[in-house]
Every structure is written in C-alpha cells, then in structure tokens.
Image 1 (spheres, rainbow over the protein chains, first blue to last red):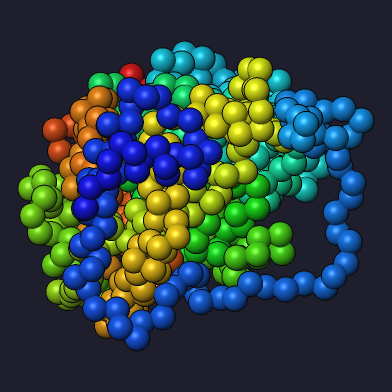
Image 2 (image 1 turned 180 degrees about the horizontal axis):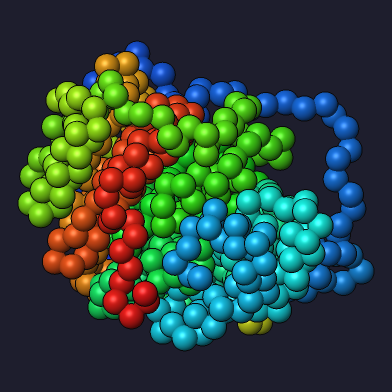
Length: 95
Length: 483
C-alpha cells in the first residue's frame, strides 16, 4: 500500500490540517509505511468477531435529564482568541 | 527529605520534624537546581507554597490525609484551574484551564501540594518525550538518553527526586515505558478505574491515568487518592476501590506467573531478558510458580493500536480549531484558512502524522478495512489475555525491548519508534492493569519488570510489586548527582 502526494493533500484537506509543501513527500512515505504495518491485520480471520469499543463492553451510561452545570460562559470565553458580546468571532462566512 | 517515602514524610510532618512549607521549598529548590533536565513545563511555586501552608494547618488541626502536605506534580495533560495546561503542544501554550480534572480535584482535596506541571510528548503521542513543544526531557540516569514517553517528564521528575510522586497517563505504554527507562514504579490501572474527566483526550477508548512513584507502597497511596467512580466520566466503571495499602503485605505463596513466549522472542535485548529472568527467579524464591503461556495474536497489537489510536485522535483533536480556545493563526482570510493554518501552525509532526493516518482510516470507503477490522482484532487480542488469565494470576515480561535509547536516535524513524511499544500496547487494547517496577540495570541504565494482572486487580499487582521490593533494592537506587 502506498499513498501519493496527492492522497496526502486530500487527507490533509479532510482534516483541515495545514502541512508544509516540502513535508508532503515525507508524510506520504511515513503514512505508506504505517499502512504497510496495518495490512498485517488482513492475515487474521475475524469472521463473526464483534468489534470491541470498550474493554468491559460497557455501553454509554445514561443519566437523569437534569441541569447539573452552571453557566460559566464568561470564564470559558475569557480564554477564547476573539469574543464580542458573548459570541465567538470568526472571519465572515456569508457575504 | 527527598529520599523518604510518603509514610515516612507523613510521620515527620506529624511529629513536627519539618513542615510542609519546608518540604515544599526544598523540592522547589531541587527543581530549580536541576532545571536542565526539562522535566517541568510549569512550576507553580506560589500556589505550591500556599497549598503547603494550608496543609500545615490541616496537619495541626489533625484532619490530615496521608498525602496532606506531600509534594507531587501533575502531567501537563490534566486540566488545572487557573494554571497553564499545555499538553506539551504549541496549540495549548496559551491555555489556562477553566476547571480541574477529577484527578486534580481529588489530589487537591487530599491536601497534596502540587509543585507544577510535567513535560510530556505533545498530546501524549510519543515514546521518547522528544515530541514536546517545550523540548526533550533528559533521562536522569544518562542525560544523553531519552526518559521514555509520553509521561517522560513524570518519570524523570520522580527519578531525579523533583517530586515525591506524580501522575501519568498510559494510552499505549506511556506510564510503564518511561517508568522502566527511569527506574521508577508506574501503574497503568484497568481502563475505567481512574476518571478521565479533565484529562485531555488522545485515544478515548485506550487512555487511562495512573500513579508513578519510587516504590509500590507510594504508588498504592497515590492510586488510592486517584481511583474511584466519577459520574463525569461516561466511560468510567463503577467498581469500588479496595484498600490498596492493606493488600500490600499478603504473601505470594501459590502465585502463578505466566511467561508469554511472544514476549521473549526476536528483538528483545539479551541484557534486558536476563534482568527479567532474574526477577522471575526472585519471585520463585517467594513461593511463585512459573508457567509458559502464549498470546498468539500479540503480533497484531501494533497495527490494531495505530489504527484505533490514530482514528480516535483524529476525532478528538478536531476540537482544536482556533475558535474557542488555544492557538489561532494571524489574519485568517476565511473560516477554512482559520482552521487549516491554526492547526497547521500549532501541531507538531507526530501529531499531524497521526491525525492524517486517522482521518484516512475513517474516511469513506476505508472504515471497514481499517477501524472496524482493528476493533475486531482488538477483541481477538483481548480474548487471548482473558483465556491466559484463567490459567495464571499474573503475566510477567519486559516493558520495552531495550534500555533507554539516545536522544535523536529514533526521532526520524516513526515506525521503529512504534515497534518499541510492542509489549505495552496490547495491554491497553485489552484494558488490563499493568505495572513496571525497577528490576536491574543494563549498561548502567534501568530496566523495568512488566507485571500484568486481571481486570481491577491493581491491589494484587501492588502486592506482588511490594513483596519484590521488600527483598530487593532496585527501587531505592538513585541516579548520580540526584542522591
């Protein structure tokens, strides 16, 4: 299995992850090596095996639908890059 | 004072031999003196002295806990209210956590004195601590060598006596491997034993916080304070924690130790193998019997781990978008540019590698072949362990294939770095508890013995480790210059 520079660009776009142009070849090479490691799993027979997501096979726990958190928005927004009137600011999305 | 155990210090504090303020100041001085190790990212001197004063008051009032007034430190992955929580990343270099992780709250409530936040691989991704935005940590035993990772600052701090005990986290070996490389005791609890609330997520189905200290006894005391069900952690398991100190003194007569042949195959350094074999012989003297066992699917652990961990990391790290907290790039032209450049400028190479890998494994058309397949393989590996643990009480072997390698030796070869996690990774996939305890030296560098137990058998592991530490002195050795 090997990935091309174009594959890497596509994946980086999906992840919204900026990568330097001159690093793309190295990433393609590293990811291809990782994939070659991963294809080893293909040798195992997993027919009829249930996928495992939690070591104790515990399902998502539910709780009563009650308010347990206080409003801490001022505290949370104090560490935000840009805030105005309780709103997070980002570059204009709609012209 | 820095070579005493928690129980000795607790006695000294109660007998008035020294105060917590004095004890804390002596550790703050040591941290300054050994700054070049780079074990700490942030030293919280003022807060520590305040906490020490409060601890002295508690001690005077007689309502103190064993940990009250004891200087500890937190891995910088645990959120600490009002204190920078960087996770070893440029992304969170400006992040002051607005709340405490449950582990932090519990240790604060116990009266422990936090000295600061410890260096680590960025977002806990790495086995050498070289992936930190704040630079590599040096191994106190050999300053040209890595301390291991990702809890490298944690392990180095304990080995160099820059804290009595510390927290770490273990997703693929990140408590045990640095504990092994730095000659200290580290325990990765059963998945779900210690709350993950406020512990910055890397791979949520594998991450587990745990204690690191010099001895099993100190580790037991710290685990007692950290463990317990937390409704704020939706993956936590509601299973009451026993009294870990009480279980330390049981005898080992009748203990059955399993030695998996896959742990002693090609790639294991002969010196490390000899240390592990000698440790197992000590256990036989203590009444244990040994059985040869097999974990046939162990060779699939590394591929399955790197699919699952990368996939989960790519999802978890999508929250770092430059909008609500953390790093934001300068003058973004539009929203996509804001995301792409903020993430591109603030994440390091290894983190990017894993985000890319995980994004690929989860992308349309590849999910079944990678993530789903890896989750099935995960069950195969887990079943191997469950079967074996019906025949033996614990499994023993090496923690890492060699002693600590040189800084820079493997940094440009990620696959080689991944392969060095072969013995630890499978344990995270199965969710089992495991320890590394100091068992000897090869070329003057420490070697850890890996002890793996059944689900929620942390008490048994600590007991087994303590009995060994009663008849050996490896855990008491200190690196030159740090005595």
